[in-house]
Length: 327
Image 1 (cartoon, one colour):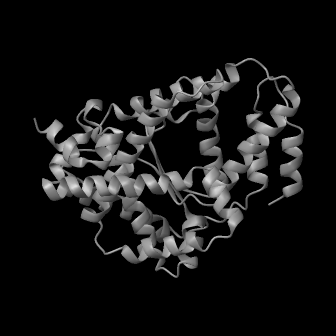
Image 2 (image 1 turned 90 degrees about the vertical axis):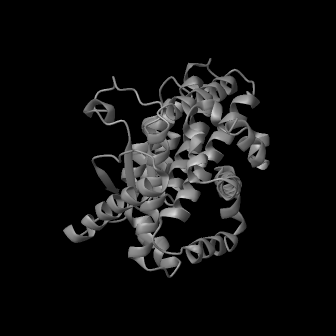
Image 3 (image 1 turned 90 degrees about the horizontal axis):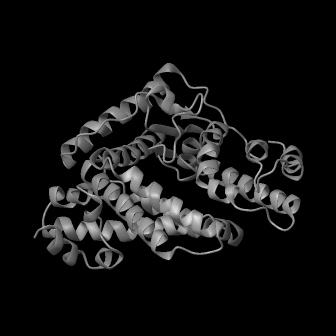
């Protein structure tokens, strides 16, 4: 970790756009300890075994036909930053196309610094990631889609090891829990081939409006409700598929979150991590009510087509969603 190099990369940000993405990647890596993935063959195999068993169990309880990426990536924090900086670049591309700010040099440094801090903080906290490669451009040389892959599965081993230790949790059990959670997301995107395009279009509409100095509230509301369904359904499958009770892991993570200092809580809020937790809880309550009134097969109908996604109102009144989709 080299904070001097990180600051220098930000202050020397250059180019014609509002963000120097090469400087973002360099600054984020310089500010982040990569951690080690010096694992034995058996330890590497354990990740693959967890994913295979999670796929089998999730298929059984959901009835959804889906697959997982051929390659499971065990990453350092730097690997995760590199894998995600291009996604951030594509998501923010409407800002790149917008006219230059009044003071482009100053704005570029501020924007570059903000994005590097965001990636560094996330890189230190992400445990696993199922990536459907939203906004991926298959024409880009060397991009994952060149090899025919349209999704990826990452495990940030140094973070999993660190958090398991901080929670005093059994590492193998904690790693397996993370694998099951990420595989549930693979099941969702497998059940709904349209979901990537739906999320992408809502994201692009929201960012494009911001670039024009407007707020597309409808686009962001639709994105929020879709992500709430994604997180809630994942929690439902975890409850049904995971081969062990895990309430203690949830409790320990919540206790750790409540014990954070005010600055850490502020950073989490600015990064939207509090919103993600709200999506978990709201989506989980929605699907629990649906399953109690019907079954998992009915809950899975949420992925039949975009029209079957719950509205913001239906998330808090699952009976109205049931009445609509069961007509």
